[in-house]
Length: 271
Image (cartoon, rainbow, N blue to C red):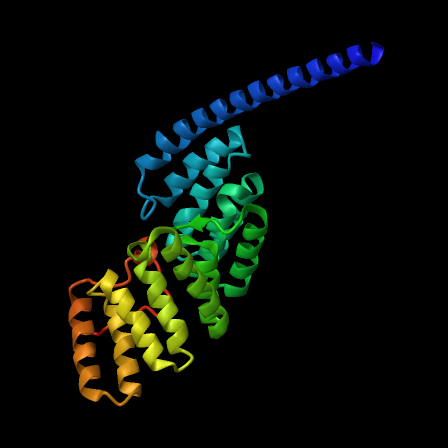
């Protein structure tokens, strides 16, 4: 009986402690949300960081003086520096965001290393760590493995890139159907095959991308190169003409951050 009462007492103690922790966490979250509203929503967001960076940063610094553990404020300090291509400055702040909330911000940091800073080996390391901790989740519309594959393309590890991209495409098709396969995933899968001089296979993959996005100028350019390598000169010229015309009309890689950075293998036709 003595052991029974001890067990009941321990259970009640743990339950009470858990309730107290939940209340403390809820109170902390509420306090942090108030700080974010005061110093980000009602302060920093009143400025345009493109030409009012000092004011933007001052608002966030004031908020962080109230609570330096708010990861979102550190990320908001970092973000405009990345867009201004001041990567080393921004990385100091995003490292702080990851310190306080790795689950939310580590994959973002890895994305920045891949697409913005172009430190591909570091990006792979970060993404692999994210996969170990959180699984092969999504950031900026694509899986971690998608971005690891882009890093491999930039490191001339074309077969490694192909394996990851093929798995991304195949798993999406299996789970959701062909219509859900992303045209940019197909573009980069085609690139990984193109870089291995498998011209016919690359064309087949590029054609799949064009069924999703028929005016994709980047895809048409590399398809044109494949046609040229196969000796199909007239077809190549037609495809290159279409690519240039589509590019002029704005049909390009349409990832969100293409406004700030050039993506791997993105083409730029001269006017």
